[in-house]
Amino acid sequence: MIANGTVYSEGRFFKGYVEFDEGVITEVVEGTPTGKIVANGLIIPLLANCHTHIGDTSLRGQIDSQTTLEELVRPPDGLKHRLLSQQSEKTMVDAMGEAIGEMRTLGIGRYVDFREGGSQGLQQLKDAIRIHPYPRPIVLSRPEKINYSEDEVEGLLAKSDGIGISAMRDWSYDDLLMLAGHVKRRKKIFALHASEGEREDISSILELEPDFLVHMSCATKDDLLACKDADTPIVVCPRSNKRFGIRLDIARTLDLDMDVCIGTDNAMLHDLSVIEELRAAYSLRDNCRRLDVTEVFKLAVENSRKVLYDEGVITIAAGNPCEFMVLKAGKNDSPEELMRAGCGHSIEFVSIGSKTWKSEEWKRSRGS
View 1 (tube, rainbow, N blue to C red):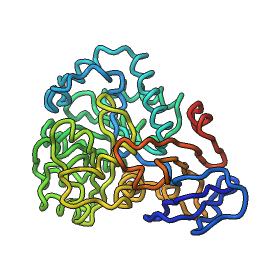
View 2 (cartoon, rainbow, N blue to C red):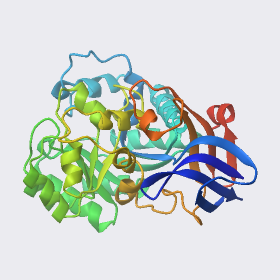
View 3 (spheres, rainbow, N blue to C red):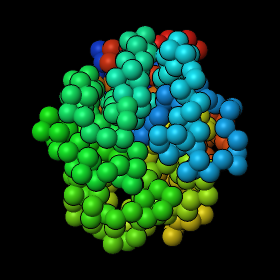
C-alpha cells in the first residue's frame, strides 16, 4: 500500500510517497509512485504530546479566564486542587478516558502525563488507560502531599514510569533531594516544572538530576546553557504560557542547540491538540526570529526522543514500524498551510502496525 503526497521524514519535507506492507514501512521515496495509493495528503508521524495533565479534563469550562497561574495550580490548595477533590471517582476516570480518546483522534501517538493525587490518582489513570490503551502513555505519578515518604514513593514507582512534580519552590529542598535520589536509584524518570511564572535557581534544580524540565519560559540564557551542559531536555507549552501572559521565546532555546519538545499542559484550559500547540509555537510573537516549519515539527517528532525514551517509531523511514497519519490541510496539503491559524485540517488515514483506518473509522475506534 502507498500513501502519497508531502512526506515528513528525518527532519525534512519533500514530495514523495511512503510504501508499507504488513505493518512495516518498506520504502520512503521522493517522486511519483506506481501502485495502489490508499491516501493522498500530508504524511507525518503520529505526534508526541510531551506534557499533559489529563486529570484536569473534568474541569473544562469551570475556570475563569482571570484566574492567575498561582491561584489555579499551586499545590496543595490551588483552585484546581480544590475542585478536583470534589469530583467522584467515576467522573475522574471517565474524563481521563475522554482525554485519551481526544488525543487519539487528534493524531497523537505518545503522551507524557503528570498524574497527581498519589496512589488514588495513579489508579484512576490506570483504570482509564485499561479502557483506552492508545495513544501510549508515559505515566509520571506524584506523592499525595508535598513531602517525601519512602514507602509512598516506592509504591508509586512500582506502578508508574517515574515521578513528575510541580515546582522546586513548592517543596522542602531536602525532601526533594531524597525524592529525586529514590527515583534515580529505581532507574525511573524524574521531571518537574521549572521557571514557569518566575525564574528559579537552575543550579539547585539541576542538582536533582531531572530527566527533563517543563516550561523554562522565564529562564535566562545562562540557565538554558546550564541545561544544555547537563543534557537536560525542555518541554515547552506555548498555549498555556500565553493564557497566563508568560512570554516564551522558543527560537532562542533552539538556537542554543537544545532538545526542545512540546506539550499541551493542563487539559482544563484547552484541547489536547499538538497541532494547535505547534501552530502557537510557529506564530509566537516573542520568538527572537521566525521559526522554520521543519523546526516546529521537530518539537513533536525527533526532539521528543529523549523524553519518550523511544526512537523506533517516531520517524517515517524504511524498516520502521508503521505509525503515521495522512492529513488534508488547506488547498495544497502543505506544512505551511497546516501551521496557519484557522486552517481547517482533517486526518484522512492512519496506520499503526498492521492496522489501518480511514477517517471515519479512526474517529470511532480506540486505536490499537
